[in-house]
Picture 1 (tube, rainbow, N blue to C red):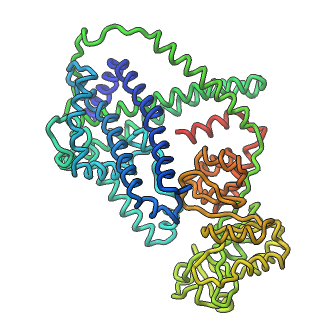
Picture 2: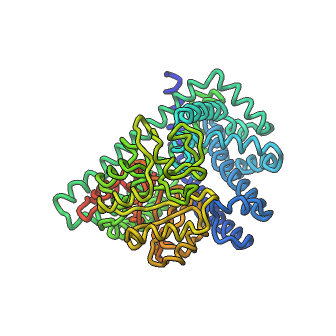
Picture 3: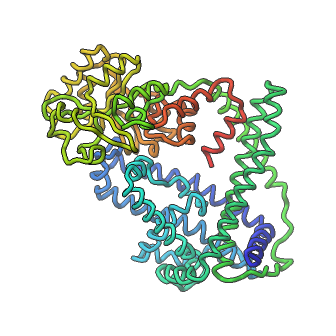
Length: 589
């Protein structure tokens, strides 16, 4: 612990002494990111869509898209650009830390030139090792590596939910995740070794990191944990102090609350960006100190740094603060509303019930869901059964394909989930119960390829029979069938389900159901212009629900309709600005 304390003190000391160097470097990194990396990525994507003739990329066409020669070239260029950005961003910080810890003078241009000399490895087979290295670090990036381009990368929730739905899946996930984290930690020193040592290859850097971690892994993990804990505590403390005046003003002088909230949010946004930059600098200092064993502070030459003036920096900071404040005041003023986002129960209410059953439907209605989503398939006798999977294996523990069985056969079976059991229901059963409960259904048609030619007319006739054509919703991942259904019954609300979407949406349907990982601000605004409703699935944590309810999307599909309803109720005209600020900070950071 004594050495850990020395390393931390040295890191803080170096960052303070060279604070103006860090301000310049991080300013250049952010400018480069927002003025080049993000625009270039957007331009390249639009160019790929235009050249290939695709309007947008979905799970149905992504294979054809990525195998197009032009797209393959562009993807390789984007990957290379991303790798180079990470290399220069972190490499510059590692080299600065290395020189600072030894009390060596340095200038930016020689550091840049040293990094340039290693770029040759990015155009060789060894770049594959760097790709593997970064892929291994992705699970750690969100809480250990504050790289500006990796923070939002994560595994889509619908994939993890499917994996975690069985005991074998949970065990496999735990084993794989633990292995990736362990390998990632043991290889974490690859980049500092590669950037600092002028004549070492990526592969040798990887091997050295692996050998070093045999003796220094525990020390490294402890230091990183200390660093992260201190960072989080500092963020919490600053947030409490900064928001306390707003807490008082909202209760004593409500008329001044909006302006105070805008100023408070702008201040916290700037502080959080600074803190994340400091974390990145501390991270580089600690890694270099551990790798090269430099616990003693290097002596700083008095002539190394001339006296700097603070006025230009203060002026720029003041301008940024005022601009952010005005933007936040305008944004917060627009957020004073009661959202009308529909709460959609995913496969009924699965807590305490089996999915897609009558009991789940009743529980969802009692939980206050506005819509209840159910999955239907056509049976071999042309009827509609309420069931999600193509086979009976997961819920009934039996061999059997839904498309090859009759409705009467299926209704005799008992299905089990999470310690509960129930019977399989028909579409007629669910509609009758839903009508009695006065709740609408969102019916998802699962297409297995063995449907009758008149599957759509049969479904329409079923809905017409119960007089629910004007109040129910129908969706499917088969966009062609949904387009046909919309033409067949224009007054029926029809939508397409996407697990993946990149690019503009131009579907002639009433709504889009999209997995949350692919929902962007641009898409939300685009669909509002059409107008086309947007249902986001499947949102099962409070943060995701709060995010999309605050954005006032048309609907959120969730396994927890009771929680979603409560969160929607909290987002009202009477909600304090303080709560809005805390929610927004949680979304951003």
